[in-house]
Image (cartoon, rainbow, N blue to C red; front, side, top):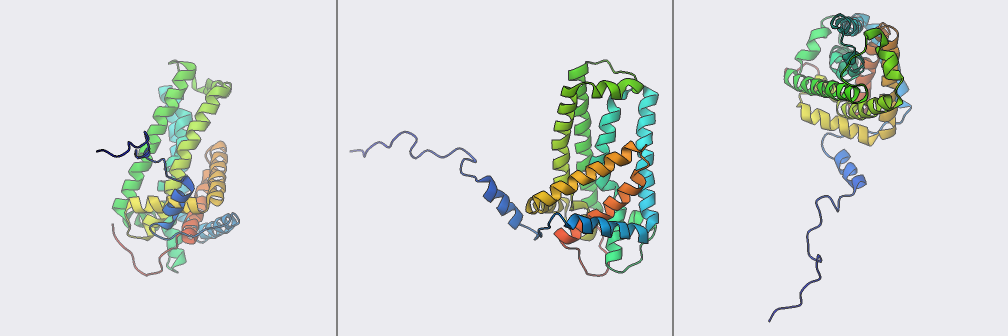
Length: 285
């Protein structure tokens, strides 16, 4: 004799993720792995101030990185002008912000040396990359993958709004700014992608320069640092974007100052949110 038949669905498994609370899940992610600390919004002023001091103490590496960014910016514009392909100009220029954390690796090394009382000169331009070659290389490949994805998406958005015809380079900006829907789609999708890139790179590359950890650990620690201080990190990302856009708008020459200060400040953000190692010596990846 069989027992009572259960009501339909009574003992059925819940759908995957049905019982997951996003707030508690974020809290568990923050609590896992390498400890991270919270930082108030006013901490950003400390980071920028310390970054400016690092730049003043060792201006040569910062100016070299800044000049490299200026050269890359003008190379992109001139190359697009030469091949008369205006469609890629705006995505490549804005996509610069996705790859910039990798270019700032020498600046993290300079700030690391300053924090340890070690001399920091032009040699830091290459030493930073050598400290954790595999981790930095993997993170660099990930950032390049994001950049490639953004280029594909941005060109697809352009073709959806304006067709396959590319306007002359001197008329490209006016054409793009004249269509509100195009600007909304571009900035909306680009903003989401930039937020994701910032979340995984906010402190990951300074951490890879400072510690012998793998890229995945560094990326997850960066994500947890952003989740632990969401308002502060959102404001920091916004200020970085504004400073970078101003630098680009000044004929790229504003990057000579913006990139070094932001790069050094990023190290100090890592030092406050995660904590820099204090042991002397270096490690090789």
